[in-house]
Image (cartoon, rainbow, N blue to C red; front, side, top):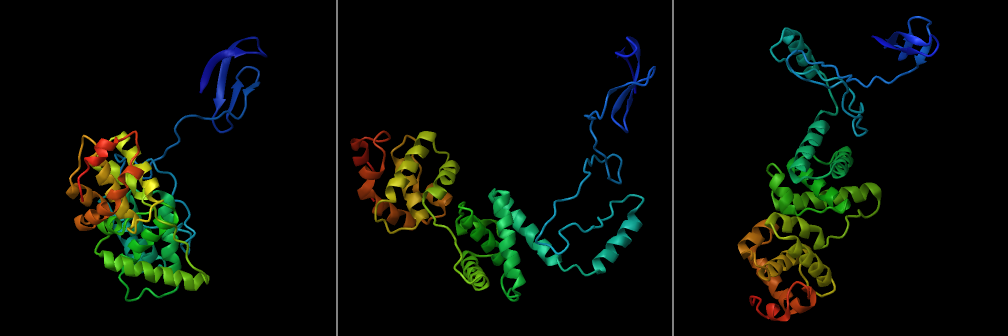
Length: 313
């Protein structure tokens, strides 16, 4: 590439040439290197697609996976796409299918975990932790005869607990293929037992608090920021009380109480649907919290008169 510029050695405008291989800008008259090792800021994308019309700007493979025998760096022959290399690609794919890949089932399990994690909106750290849990259990060769879908769902449940981002069993059940809540619960107990046998110590699952679910439930109900803030304060104060209900039930009851004090009241059915707590359980939880309303509801959110006007359980 030639350009016209002033060379400090020649003291006059000369033709400058940019050497792409070396990254140098050189004067064509005296040979002075004006700039060395320049960075080429142009796009370096290349297309490796067989179809020239397909925009495939991928030049690297996936990251290494230490959970796989080959690190996940093996070559996979793609399926034919109707181009001139269809016969060759098809033949290579068939030969690849005949070969033995010890990680084939493991890769499929990781893909299923990734799909469920994406549906739940989980971060990559939780997905990686679920993969590690499944790998540890799979290495013990005790999964034969077990409900595979429930095992994968239970791995995600445990990973969420360990990363302090818990999800309810019902939420995980909603993204699982065919596993029920009872099956996921049994699979969770089985996995924890296997991990304890392997490590020789109890598995740390993390403590579930009502506040862990509150913000997500409030968002799904479309509550205002003020109502969400009041619910968060109420949940924190409720932990000081002796309310013998599950954290999810407490969160649901607090949300229902807060909405009854707002202009945008939510029916019991809607709160039950979003939180996954049955209407009967929600009523009993609300009944347990109702006597403590003046203690847990922030004074800036509701006055005493408004609290007295709350619906009786």
